[in-house]
Length: 221
Image (cartoon, rainbow, N blue to C red; front, top):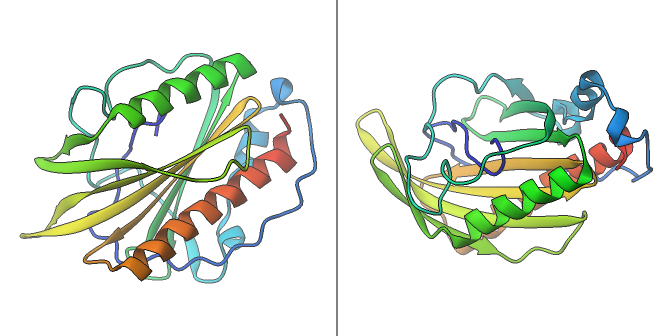
C-alpha cells in the first residue's frame, strides 16, 4: 500500500482470528532521525499478533493492483516526502488468513499529514473500482481516533480462485502518528454474516491499534 494504495492480497481468505494486547505508549526517539532499521523493528511480529501467526512473503501473486478508476485506488495523487517504507505479511496457521502491514516514515510531519489527507480524500470519494475484472465497492466506516488521525474502509468484491469466484471482504485501516503512517489490511473470503463481519472489523481495528502503539513506542513522533 503506497499511500492508501492496495498491494496484492491472497485469492481466498477464510477468517480472521486475532487476540492482541496493546503495549504501553511511551514516546521514543525523535522521528526525524530514525533509521531504516528502527522502522523495521517498529513493525509487527508474529509474536505480537499471538499464537498461530507466522510471517509470509506476500510479494508474489494475489489479487493484484486495482485498475484505473476515477477517484479510486491506484490513481490520483503521488506520495512525496517518503523516507522509509517497511512492509510485512502474516498468515494464521495453515489457513489462507492474511494480515498485511505497512509503515511509511516521512521526512516531515507536514509530508505525512499531506499524504494521509490525500489518501483519505481519495478513498472517501471512491465508491467502486475494478480489480482483475471484478467490481469492488468501497465504504468508509466510523472509527474513533487512536492516533493523530485514523480511518477505516470496507472493500467488498470478489476474486477468482481456480475456476470459481470467491466473495472477499477487506478492511483497510490507516493511522497517522507524527511523521508516520501505519496501514494494515485484513481480509475474509466467502460468505459472511453480521456477527462475522463485526468480528473481522473489530479485529482489524485492534491490529492497527497494536501496530500504531508499537510505532509510538519504537519511533516516537
